[in-house]
Image 1 (cartoon, helix red, strand yellow):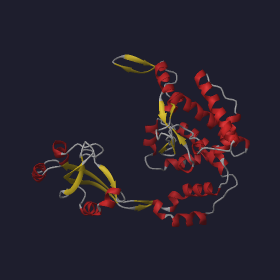
Image 2 (cartoon, rainbow, N blue to C red; image 1 turned 120 degrees about the vertical axis):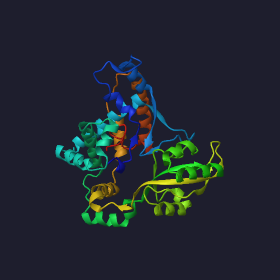
Image 3 (cartoon, helix red, strand yellow; image 1 turned 90 degrees about the vertical axis):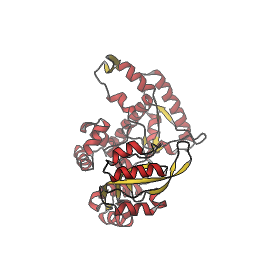
Image 4 (cartoon, one colour; image 1 turned 90 degrees about the horizontal axis):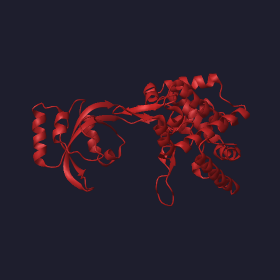
Amino acid sequence: MHRWLPLMIATSVAMLLVTAGCGRKTVGKVNDKPISQAEYYKLLERMAVPLTQGENPIRDPATGRLVREQAGYLALRMLVDRQIILEMAEKEKVMPTEEEIKKELERQKKLPDFNERLKTLGYTQDDLKEDIKVELAAFKLLTKGITVSDDEVKKAYQQNIQQFTIPAQVQVALILVNNRKTLNEVQDMLKKGNDFHVVAMQKSLKLPNMPQGLGGVWLRENDQTFKQFPQWWQLLQKTPVGGVTQPVVAKLPTPQGGEENGWIIFKVLDKKPRQVRPLDEVKEDLRRLLMQAKSKRNLGRELMQMRAQAKVSFEIPRFNRRWQQDIKQLQEQLSQAQVPASSAVPAPAATGTSP
């Protein structure tokens, strides 16, 4: 659901301030020496984390540098906004019901790798239900009184079918060499039946930002590389799973940032055909996107106004001072009717990633 709202997101470290280590005086050990909970929280409070708009990092327009915020202050500010959203939903009588929350949870459970994502985020289903509650509240506020028919959803699906098309993919391991002598040695080793991954470890160049032979990497048919070298994609399509290609001439990056002549040998590990996600699978997400598109409500601005009026205090004095500074600046912006794009509805959790 986070995809349909412009969300301000930070890394998951922020929410650890309010969720991790509860009830424990230590959070770990190093060579039998304990790491105290106080040390842990102090570091998290002060740690600077980058802000993002959706999935894109926010940069200072003057310097181009990433905008960062202390994780402790960011977590508190996001908790304030969560509470304001719920109070707005309660006041406007659009608070999500338990049944709506349960229905959305069941819908998300059908998404790929749901349980794995929960584990990665350190979420329980109760944690997720709290996020869903805030997300639904924000969505219902934004789309209050708006409906979208099944015919509208179907038409939008047909008109934007490319957005629901998953490109064909090939998983490959590869060997990179930059001279004919090494290339001949590699080919001889492969002809003698040596394992591709072992040969890759012994002979392949280890270049920065280049996938190596061990784990393999998934490549999509619409990757920029294949737009430039379509014959490479054709070669991989013709090569069966488990097969190894003939050497492909290529320009390889050097550690110094230049280029050199070389060769790439691919081993095809797996393939996935092009797929179109069926309408039933994307219908609900598409309906919500269309409802949002119809909305004329500036929920981000309303949230800013509510934030400026809210009675807020923190136990950490420096965060109180920072809050007052932010509210003063916010009130000036509101009085001048200048609402920056980054002031949109904040993510209900620091990751902004409901599975």
